[in-house]
Length: 417
Image 1 (cartoon, rainbow, N blue to C red):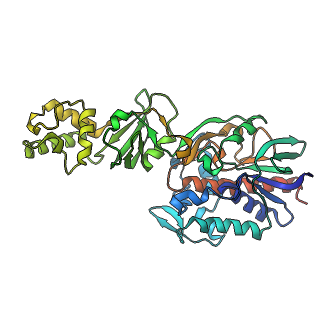
Image 2 (cartoon, rainbow, N blue to C red):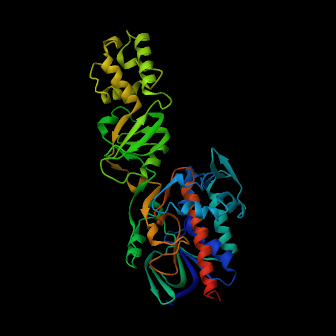
């Protein structure tokens, strides 16, 4: 089969790839030939699953670097300063957004509206799309790139690589492209699941399955250094800690022997918690110990809290049998409940990828420093955002910026004919 020729080939038909293709065609003009190469049977499969099917497509604070982590973090505020923002990007496609606690959603509240707008724009701009094309290799030959898939061979002047990471493999992101990039001289920061549950010791979670509790969660390394913290609702499962605040910590878990502390009453100091416990002690002295914290926490939490506090008095005993040491230890646990991290959840439970192409191998234009005329966008880069639309915002932003710079490179070389 004869090779198919393009000015710009976008590898990956996800969020960043679709944004890149649209921007490349709009900037390059009608004579600039653009193609999207996608391994799945359809484009934008992962977009449909975001925001529980509502598509949390951005955030009003998406241009603030404190919501991201990774070696490429210095690019966040710079690139967002030259990108109009997720809301403006979708307004240009006819999608009206609404804000819910800072999170941006399509006004229809339906992810299909977002994907349809992107697909219709591809069609309107006459951008060629090739689905069910798994990239096997890319190779640079003088001023051209050769892209081999399981079906076709493409020749392109410029590649924009937007293949995603390794999270949610059922959506087609299996991490295979890291190997392809390594074959042409790139390295990558070791990847791990991000925005996912965190496994801890099952003995600490006994009888807690299904309980949700508000609090502040903090991540520490083995030297007891605070790495990151977040507030929100913690969900206990049989094997793990879950919930958005836990997901946001997961991107920072990159060492052995790290642990999470949960502050169950972040609005109170440890001294104030002790005062509360002594007040309950006085009011409920004849109650069973298992009922002492009723009204503060769910009853099912009491055995776990007393166990973590190393208070082994029978919970059927009256509250007055507790000692000052017991009260003090219970207060410490409520303020800093300790959970050692065993591992992150599997890739199929992750919403994003931590790690990827490092900052020292890309320029601020998102062009590779290793190979010319190769640009990157989206999750393939070593950058991950918190829950709340930040990762999709980065996808649109990096896709648009990579495309603009790719087209500028074409025009400078008078390659668009």
